[in-house]
Figure 1 (cartoon, one colour):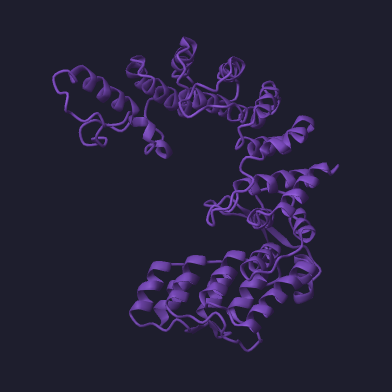
Figure 2: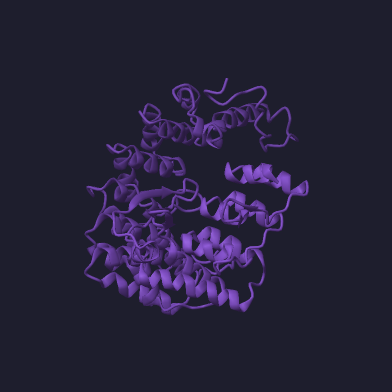
Length: 439
């Protein structure tokens, strides 16, 4: 039993799972307070260990001497992912426990994290605040510590996600207020509100979100743009994307939006629609001072399935201009567009070849790939300029495109002698020909 406690304390989820499979008690008590191990994992915000304990049979609803349960402690701690894991472990959660969970989350939301921490500790001194980031998802939250208590400011996300999970349709204005309490697109609460409203996919939510674009405060407009983007993306799991081609409705707001972050989100939302007026908005941002806005311009320019039939000369000229932008992210987006363009204009291939000399490796990889798919023999020479491939790019499929070009060329040269040979390239033979930089 001691080894299970030790595994939980050091956060070793694999060891916890193995010990539980070997017969260890998932509800083992530990520490001077005699708390179940699940409470230790919750207090440490250790989701993998908590999930291993749950899988092994730990009870998230076990009533403790202070009246709480591991689930309620997850709510108090402000972790919406842990709360969801513990609440959804037993399906369905009994009605009394469900009501208790929502009431607890609503209390923290209404009172506020700082006020509740001071009430519980009775302390008036300064709080320790730490930014906690989720590298996998990209979200962040603030972790506050006062005395011996530590909580995270995700309670509004806990309430929002659990209401949605149990079919409670919170009012639009209330959800907006929750998001605006954490005015950052990457904050957990903001992201969860956007996700929740984006899955409603009803006309009422679309209209309310669009009306919010008229607000004089840029944070309200940013939230509106984010909501509209989420609505356009829709509920892919349930197959609902009723707003996929309605980005054109956002053109009047994009034309007058002065805040670069809001404009960038609007442009992103509009790129999923193929209306010609969206191209005009995109081209008007060619010289925008913010690179995040300029990087989205290529995505607003139409590109048909064959890569050329819908492309207007002014759109092509716009992308060619962006390929020389000072910002590498902008150049990469322009290069990506050109790499998928199949028009025969010589300046396209020449621009891609020039980009194989770019200072940024992702641009060089994209440019070489574009030349290869255009069957431009210069791709073979340019491939050597990619250089040793960065670790995060070593599995990029585009690194194989020169090999595919060479395979197509050999097949074309031998087609007369072997007319029955398949023209589909085989899998990349990693044992004989290596991607650049991986020899």
